[in-house]
Structures are given as C-alpha cells and as structure tokens.
Amino acid sequence: MPEPSESLQRLVASGRCDCCNIGEYADQLKVLAEEVADSKQAKQRGRFFKALGDESRQRIIGLLSAREMCVCELMSALKMTQPTTSHHLKILEDAEIVKSRKDGKWVFYSLSDPVRVETLFAIFR
Image: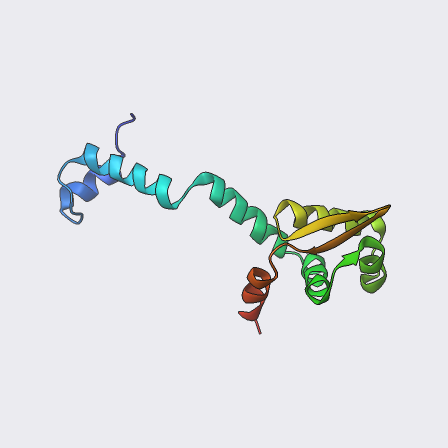
C-alpha cells in the first residue's frame, strides 16, 4: 500500500480527525471510497448526466415522455437527419435513459424509467 500523502499526514497530526493512526485512517478512507464512490456507479452516472447535457437529447427525452416513438417520428418532429437522431438515441440508450423495442423492420424507443426522468426534469420546472 502506498504511503499516505503529506497533506493527510498533516491532517492527522493536527488532531482535526478522529484517528491517531495514519495507516488505519488511510485504510478507512479507501474503504469509504469503495462503498460510496464506486467507480462503476460513478461511470454510469457520468454517462447519464453527459447524455442529459445536450439540448437535442433533452428534446428527444421530452417527446419520449409523451409516448413511444420510432426514429422516423423523432426525425420528423425535431427536423433532424437519421444519422444524427440515431447517434443521440445510442447515447441515451448507453446511459440507460431510453430502451428500444424491435417490431418487424421498425425500432421503437421509449424511456427506460419514466419516473426517474420525470423526477429529474421536475427539478427544473
């Protein structure tokens, strides 16, 4: 295990934390990070918020909150090309915001978890 940083050593020496053993304290911080700042969850949250960070994707989410739609409906409503629409849908699908359902040659999209998206969007109303 690497040595605790100088700044962490100074913090423990200052008495501003409830630990007197720097090694134990560094171990506690590592365990805490694994419990509450899991890298896999952080990566998923990053994808989720990145997906929401684009106006076109927010508009797609708005339309899909009304009902399930296929790519051609989204293209027509938003005046976007098929490649652009599909690109945005792929990002939203990777972030688990939308899901797809194939029906013959058609692919329909809907929100994966409408309540989660509606709750998040309600914050900005």
